Image 1 (cartoon, one colour):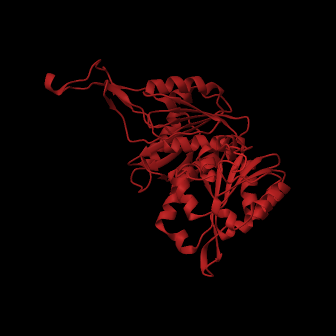
Image 2 (tube, helix red, strand yellow):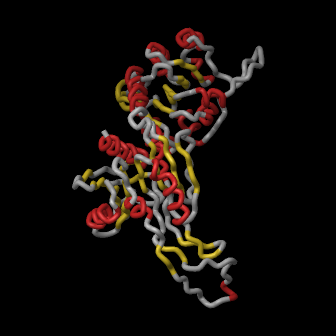
Image 3 (cartoon, helix red, strand yellow):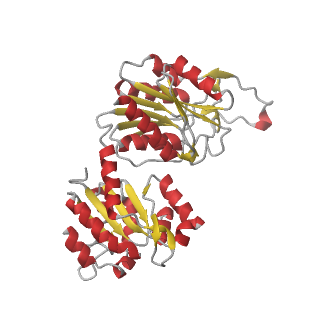
Length: 400
């Protein structure tokens, strides 16, 4: 599945760099085109000559070639690649990637990469277990990077523990599986809603909620990585996506979100409604800021917002799938099953504010998938990107 793919192989300064030669060779034998980017310290462990001979391409290590002044464009590399694999990834480079410290060619290339990035850590067990390393890896996961967990065994220190870079054959398998997975929804169109809606009271105040949009954006990216063309209708959030197959449409209010969802829905094979849409909006919106000194305490009359899930569910045609989300605080399962019935959904992802680490403004979630035909698929507390993968697994299995 990687034949014809363009792969950047990033190599950092660790003893496991010797494995990178074998990894480069495996990529080439599988039919990929490989461009090696090394940190300066990586050259102390394995020579550019070896890697250039294996890949048939000059190794890139500095921003320009000293004797000719030839500039190496990290932007061009980032656009060229179908995947970037950093193996080995030292604690130093992981920290720089997590915090955008662009002081070498490898990190600047990473920051410019539009393709998926795979990180294979390699370091001593104490460094691997350190809270700063674990936090940096979690940051990279939250950015959408794929972490290839290191194995346990004898390390360069001769201690035994977790920190060995995963074997090249297994890294190759991870990429093959990834690209194969990217064909599962090829030709499908998906609609995702994400984030909160803001319902204006006056030009500076609104009714809203704490939704961060992280779950919806993770789902949009996961669907795109499986090959789907995704329309993401997003309320006001600070998260973003650069995936080329995700078309983001920004909205503010529930009515605006419904209008955009209605445009995309007829052509969508898959619809996932993660947005935390405000149930109510002010009946009247002041045209200027309501001043405390100029008025009595205002009374805000409310009107119901349109129900986006129910509106789309009523128009669902054969072959379309709609997945809803339900964030409940009591009688969770009963309320979720009622929503499936009333809104003509195929399934609903149920989570509860009573579950620590699930819900708004956190990086983790726990959902139970309930289906219209009576299935109940409990989940585990995971990163939202991992939960997104589980949900898309359910979707692909249901469509197959």
